[in-house]
Amino acid sequence: MKQTTECAGRIFSLVFTAALIVLLAAAIIPGVNGASAVDLGSAGNFVILAKSGITTTGTTKIVGNIGVSPIAGTAMTGFDLIKDSSNQFSTSSLLVGKAYAANYASPTPSALTTAVSNMETAYTSAAGQGIPDATELYAGNLGGRTLATGIYKWSTGVLIPASTVLTFDAKGDGNAVWIFQVAGDLTMNSGSQMQLKNGAKAENIFWQVAGPTSVTMGSGTHAEGNILAQKAITMKSGASLHGRALAQTAVTLISDTITTPVASTPPAPTLAPLPLITPSPSLTVIPTKTMTVNVGGNSAVYKAMFMGRGLNGIIVAGTFVSGPGTMIAPAPGTVYQYFDLVPAQFTRIDRELIYFTVPVAWMTGNQIQPENIVLYNLDGNQWTALPTKFENSVGTRDYFTATGPGLTQYAIAG
Image 1 (cartoon, rainbow, N blue to C red):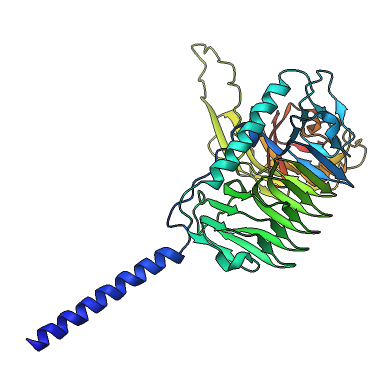
Image 2 (cartoon, rainbow, N blue to C red; image 1 turned 45 degrees about the vertical axis):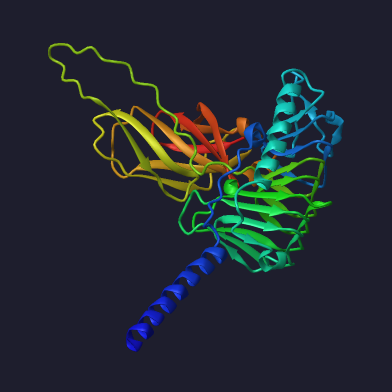
């Protein structure tokens, strides 16, 4: 009887210990309560949105739209804005996108009112989401930490000390979401960084910051994610943000870089069908085929879609070249790159769709808007402009497509 009692006691002890370990693990392992992405609504159409103003000094580079409401366009200072003839938006050499204000022509005012309302709703949604996976984690000091997906909450502020790194680790889950609920300020000291790891995406990171100052990014810092600030967002010299700055007061910039986070795969354009051929009794019609291939080599081209009769297989390489060669004039405009696009063996090609990228920094440095990028084809000794389309911005690069007549030498210029 005594032996049975002792055995039962040991079993109970083991079960209790195992249960305690499970409970403790659930309490400290981030992600168990399941963070979900915050719906930004039409506020997601802006890389910067503010209610009381956007100010910049120095050579700031912004990829995406900016807007202010309910205040007027005069609250966007330092951009040297040029009003469009429609009076619905402005442009700037510092901006790869458009600037909108509440006093611009319809429908801009109502669209901005909706966007600001969506921004405020998103802030409230982020603040009220779920049961936190961790509270007061590391007493708010996130320097040198790696965080898995989850909901994190602090009753004070969050600090990333100088020259330290905060890492977001998705562990291979491209849908991983991080929610940060910060009652105090978010402060990044000089040189501190945020980085993405194992499939983490900036568009799935949300900083809800309620502090009296809200967000301060020191010189040379880099942040990831959507910043939803109840007050101001201040970025000091040389700071960068891969995300959105959505402030319920003002955004202040000094020679900074902000890029909208977008889906990592640009949209897939389509080629128009080739005209049908009516066969004669003696004509054997070879069916038209469409084939998409990845392009190797060291050029700006990464993919191409071919249409032709009798395509069975094709290997294509894009090779960077220094220029068009002797006796041939340079391509028009400011050239980003010359390259040859050639197949490994002869193949009949009737039409092609070329996918290529251009660094945002190069376009900004040369004051070239995406819509002014053109792919030129070398036809004999003459450069011919091809129909070129801006598709999307992804991180530090813009994506384009152009329809070409065949595989020859090309130039990307603006």
